[in-house]
Image 1 (cartoon, rainbow, N blue to C red):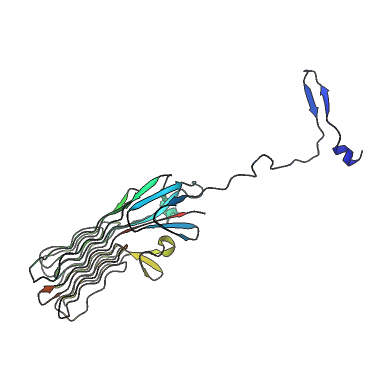
Image 2: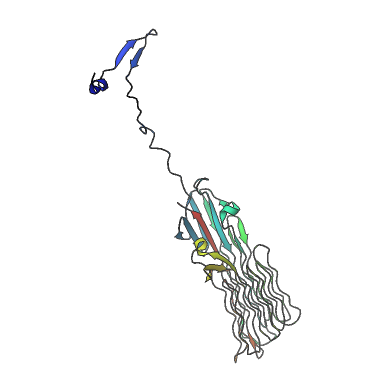
Length: 336
């Protein structure tokens, strides 16, 4: 029989003992795969979300919140691919103190980068409120000695996924008020009795101690520097560095990283020496005391949690303390 005839051989039906018809077929010796099976397993699902300003870095999406909002998960993904997020949460910085003053402490900084070492933050398909802490307001300025001496104000807290960071502590003031505690503590006021504010372990560090001048505010990475005996305020403590692939372009860039949570520097008074710089990560520099009038403390950078610089003092006149920088929340996850 030719092969063609073999293929076209008709089916035969026989009667079996049960009275039912059986179909007898000829086998071709091979089988056909894939029909009716959907072409194999479906591709894995990755996390998808909305909210904030969204950028892409490699296989990851980065959502940046500089104001209050909602991180909305539209697809929670799978455990085998991505159903968790990484985050950076930075609170608002404290403002500098007023009159021979300490610098403001940085807002507290918490993160879970990279998630393989921490397990990540599991998420489900729902909305997550994001709260961004404001930087502390500055108080007064250009008043005679003895009027309105005051510690700086505290920054406000930030939160996401039930995790909260504490605002930075305000800087201290001459003889009257110590630096305030916070995520990072405010620097001590100058001269007598004033002490530095404490920081919260895991979020920041203490402010710098007093001398003739006030101390610098604490930073997320390092404590503030002490005031010097030559009337120059202490430097602000440095903030923490993060790769741009984790946080995008937010923060203060330096050395290939983005920094957050720098402390403000203490102010100088009645000296020809230049004031100290604020800490890397948005900290404001101290006010100048070498000019014909008192200099103002520099504000902390917005969306870094940087502390404000303490004001300068010249011939019994004080400048204006620097306000604290606002906070930020950054969320990162794998999307492909």
